[in-house]
Image 1: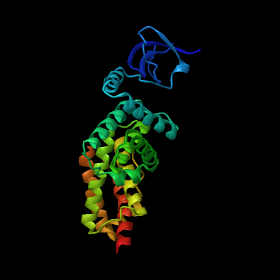
Image 2 (image 1 turned 180 degrees about the vertical axis):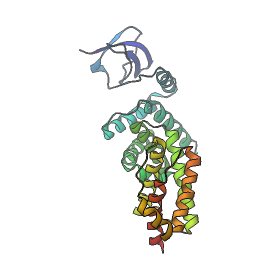
Image 3 (image 1 turned 45 degrees about the vertical axis):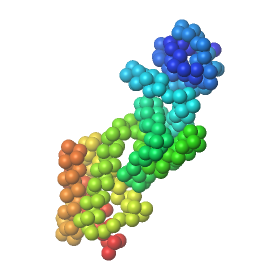
Image 4 (image 1 turned 90 degrees about the horizontal axis):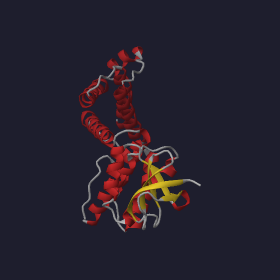
Length: 280
């Protein structure tokens, strides 16, 4: 029978304990913390949910965070992470316990005070991370129902970013920065080509996915093969799109502080030309 050694009861439903290997774990279950003292044991069957926080700094941050939550809110926010883990079907970066719990706590409080924060990357997030967005819809609905709030659609986008962050081990701040860059690039394209792109169209989804993958390649330092025969053709046949592609790349270079290979301009030109042709 698996047992854990209790280190501290954070409240009636949450314990900090250690397993047989000395790893610190967070144990969650209705009433499991009631009357419990440091040094006592608890069996696995009494625990509803369990997770490990390996990083000492993350452990401390999480302890401080959940000590400020009422028990109902804490239970709901822990359930949110559990829904994500079950639906994703793959390991999550442990930082989601802190990052998403913290985000949802403040989002719920803002709603109760009538404060709504606009999400400028909602359409892009929905298009770039459709699987994460679908999970975020379910999480938001659960939080709204359980805590009697009405988190807006923009929050679904923020939650989807947290989910993607936990799945690919990327900082939410970097994902937001990259989303902001994509929005800037799309605005430049619309202004330079004097068009308005339908944000629900498959062409828009293809464009921003191309921009996202280009940004990821640049960040990783990946080099893609340059189709030399096409380069000269594009310069001559589609000079407006080719020049615009280079303007976009210079903005990407400035934002990412990374070298960008010429092949990126070639593939970007093809995307721009396809969009321009459909708008004519």
